[in-house]
Length: 378
Image: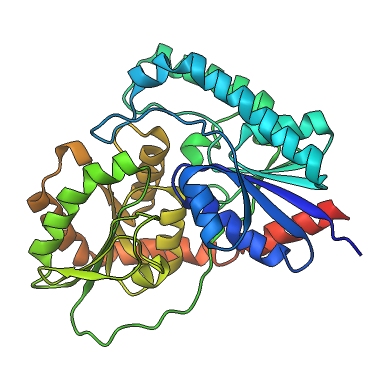
């Protein structure tokens, strides 16, 4: 008997979106046929995990050579952006028309929601970002315009049958700065918990404390951060066990050593590195922060410069007391080393992260979403 089909549409820049939906899909494939649509890093990651993936046109902001979001470049490309977005809708629609899915799961992909609406297919949106936040704009007028734009954009997100936030409910919501401030959304949002595996980890026999440095994000943003954190890691390696992951999904997964520091181009098991660490240094992506919380670790977060969502995540993590936030543009390797030393000896941060971790353990995001999918498929 043919099995019902699920169309999973995943944002392809970076790995966080693809990684979390793959965890959901692994459970769903026991009962349903699941295929993906994505691009770039997301498509490569899902392909490596053995899923059927259809490449669709990339729709993303522009990045400059320094690894920062390029507002000028993004505005300049707006006509192409809208053209690519329209093409993406058509690609999604054509795939749905051919494969006849019963449900569309969209992780932060508006084009899939619109295509499913056209095809009259039920939809489930998974996202930790419903608005675009611009941290460098502080004027009341610009914040007002940003809010109006967010409310307008939500009228399109609102076309989805279900709106799921892979986060903790208030007041512990890491993504509250880009989710919970929308008046239109509050009644419809379902907080399902972090979509992460909380696996047991084998700890090393080393007597030295451990620092894990995990670089992630688009290629340009990774390459701008790696030299600074690599230099800091070398300084620390004589005293601590140091692991650096450069976050290159296309790179080899075998580790090399540099001045006593263990270096991965692509770390095959970042959870184990986080769970066995005393301090984690990372970008401020939502998936990374959720892993840090579940592992109960102190963190130093270095958001991508001018990346509104990451800055909002980092500020909330700092407010909850388990992370300190550094601005990449104003941080040297020596300053990062001093910050790691400070955090390593700040036990109050451990108490703060344990409090949030206790809340997170009440919610199994993967199982909660799987239950909702099965209910939608009935």
